[in-house]
Amino acid sequence: MEHRGSIRICVLAFAFSLVAQPSNAQTAGTVVRYSRNSGGLDTSFNGTGTMAITTVADFNKAVAIDGQGRVTIAAEFLSGGHYHLLVSRYNQNGAADTSFGYFGVTTFSFDSNSDELANDIGIDSSGRIYVLASSSQNYVVRFNSAGAVDTSYNGTGFQRPFTTLLPNPRMFVRSDGTTAFVASTGFDGENSVVISSFGSVGPRFIGSFTGNGAHEEPLGITLDNQSRTIIVGRAANGYFGIMRLTTFGTLDKSYNAAGVGGAVPGVVLRNFGYAQQAGSDVAVDPAGQIVSVGRPESVYDFSARFLLLVTTSSGTVVNASNLARGNTNTQPGVYVPWKLAIVGGTYFVAGASAVGNTLQRQMAIFKLSSATFDFDTGFANNGFAHTSFSGYNDCFGLALAIDPSTNNPVVVGGARNM
Image (cartoon, helix red, strand yellow):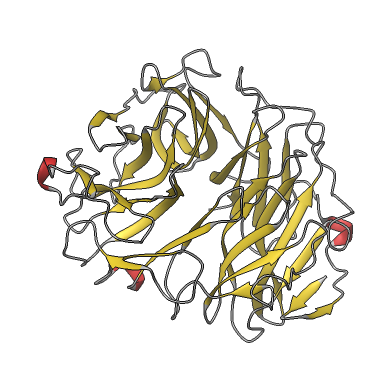
């Protein structure tokens, strides 16, 4: 189904090729499910553990998994000269879930005259699906479990988290349906500040990591068990930044209350020795620690690039590591950690790795232990597994979710020819 507001129009083009395997297409949306213990491919998914979907216009952008292990993916498709939102769902075995939308696919157009880009996705405990996207405006649309727009949500099925179009928004959806959003006010990071919204029209908080909002970029968001919003990204001074807000949308000055490291209370800043570095995602572990991963920016050497910053709930830094490895034919020379998920004492991180002296990448999953704050050497190749797709020379992970019934990680992203 294609949805435009409350109007539904059947779209048949995707049913026959929804789970297409690698072809001569220049790009594909990719899916990989790994074994949580060994790091090997979980072949109970699609028979191989992998899937390349060539009907998407670009790459798979976001993923969420419901309580039945069904994998829901947000991407785009091309129609009428514009990109539009495409949401697909797969059963736990990798087959298209024909109970969802039309043969496993539903689409949505907020503005049929503008390109629409999928930004994020989440599922609540009732199986309702929230997709954050950008068109002429940022919007979040909610689908019911069957793939129809849920018009009980804001009376229309969608709403705008911000009063104006903002770049690169992120979203976190809690199991009870509470949502939090973050974006920056300037495209390309120019003169930008951090904005967080809780689903109402208009921001609840406008501020920054440093008090000087120029060139700041929020990249990850989560909520802790007290409904406090935690944001990670790049601060104006080029530092890796973590910010925590109260439930009222103000800086939580109990977090790093003493302002250690030159930060204002409510913020933790860290310089890992690069001119620019950024936190890319954040989560809270079972001990209440705030765990974030990130990377240097604009660094084109072949040294490892995997930054880990962990603080207590009060903002004390527990660990700050640049998890470097050698550059050999078996160890990845360049890491790009992007998305984080925590299961018990395990941190899974999705991204990309490059082996040897090349910038061409492979999709990667990293496993770290909360006991050592380092790679779990018993997982795959000394803590990471990487996957390439036949017919493509550049592959990468963009999003990550955990199957709640098996705790196996699912990574989605893209493959292309460069």
